[in-house]
Amino acid sequence: MANSYFRFKQFTIHQERCAMKVGTDGCLLGAWVDLSQSQRILDVGCGSGLIAIMTAQRCPGATITGIEIDNEAASQATENAESSPWAERIEIICEDFLKFTPVQQFDTIVSNPPYFSNSLKCPNDKRSKARHDDSLPCNEFLTHANKLLSPNGALSVIIPIEQQETWLTEAEKCGYRPSRVTHVHTRRELAPKRVLIELRKGTPEEYRRDDFNLEEVPGVFSAEATEMLSPFYLKL
Image (tube, rainbow, N blue to C red; front, side, top):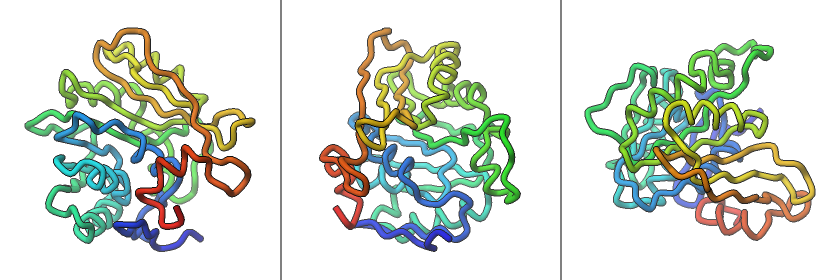
């Protein structure tokens, strides 16, 4: 059973009421996303509030909105945000993202989206909704995000490597181009399992493509992972 909380250097994530617990994917995305031009940040499917709070730590001038469809997770995300040092800059909204119509657009949209398609559902309904894309298909997510993203803004996600081409194809239909693509390897010699993708409107076809290695040897973070995650992980 996962711990009921996960303590970081500057904040703690309580997660006993959240279907999806703190994991490497969310931590990597929260640390990787480019926030250099961010004033308004939206975390879609924010779960426990992890990525919303990470971006608040990284970007002192930004306001952050987290949107989460599950009542219990949204409630816990609110509590986590309120207990963080950046409570005044984080708002958690319990709503279906596809019905979310804010007044202002966002400079940055970030999401660790549900990604299992046409696979066996988990018997836990909340966990199933958090893991499967039935309620937030890729094309619908990208189409609605396009309406909420400012003209010069960026949308960043982390997904299984097997879904990269599907996402890039659907993104192009919505007018996005990739600006950064990072393949995530557990170790250098292993095939990547995840990919971090940054999309922008109208970006030229050339884009930055690189690889990220999480471990040097089993159980030991690589130098690049240590640099990326050291502002957050207690053990780094």
